[in-house]
Length: 442
Image 1 (cartoon, rainbow, N blue to C red):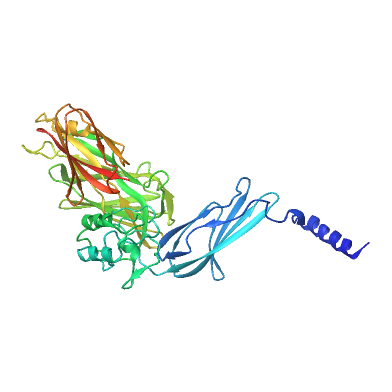
Image 2 (image 1 turned 120 degrees about the horizontal axis):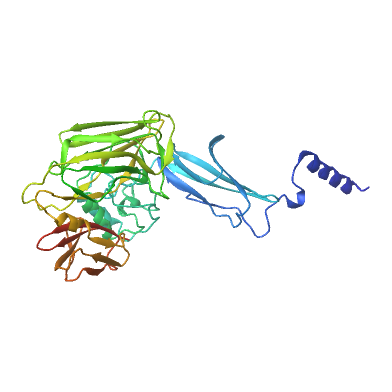
């Protein structure tokens, strides 16, 4: 027997005894490739997403490994999303394994102590004012990465640095609306958040929303209004949740500000009294709410975390012209199990009150005005409850007039395709009703 044949027999015997794959199939499948998608740079305290962009995935098992130096930071078998708490270089490994083939890929991501974006604070001085407008001019026309889940809501938003700087400030901050280009649209976030100051704690921002979801849209005076407190929505889970708090400024014309009740039934945070508890405190017209887990573990999920019950007043004052009430969670804070702070975005909730004593029906009319689709791409459809002449006024969030039209039919359409993406106010008026709706243009 030739020496080469002896070596081959020994190698095959090793594979049989120790269960290793035959040499002929111990390699990547023909025509396939293992590859990782993700940024090569990121910011400390930012959530970074890595994707599996491999050309072959069916029938394969996957293993993600994140290491820093010689330390394994994270293991995952599905996908990899990680909030980096420390600066430095990290290596991301992806290993794919099928019945007959395997393959690997890796990338290095550098995490810097850069600050995330606060929409409107273009010069990074911690305050939104006219000075932020100047920065737009210095960076006019610059382009870069689109900010994930960007909005003009006044919350810290993770953003990877662009390639340009002005006076030591990365020009991603001048992209206040996060759409990847610096232009006149970025003045909208400055106008929306004018006068706001940056929170002083260094926390992590999650884009999962916290909002109040009314069980019904229309109520009578004297009713107890029931809300679901919702954290996270489908395809946008809230993660690393241990505790959270927020406050509401209650309108004393609408609500009895001495009454508020929280229940934790059907909460995805756990069972009331054993896994989770709540706290509430009313000072003047401000209601403070805290919901805290007792499991000492970070949780992930979406949907109802509790209920809020508020008592409406027995009647409305004579001549009250306000036809709707907005309840907006404010002062939102979150805590992870290790004490690290983070925040959540917020959404607006609307209810409509019908006064049973005066017989006012305008609020029912207001509640039945329909806008669709919203968010809108090009054409916004409006369905009015009654066929009257309606004035339709569209403004930006700073109050600047964008459109002013008159509608005489119950169904009307607005062409918005030439508008920049962002949030607008739609004012609908006739001789009996005054309605304001928010419209999001995509």
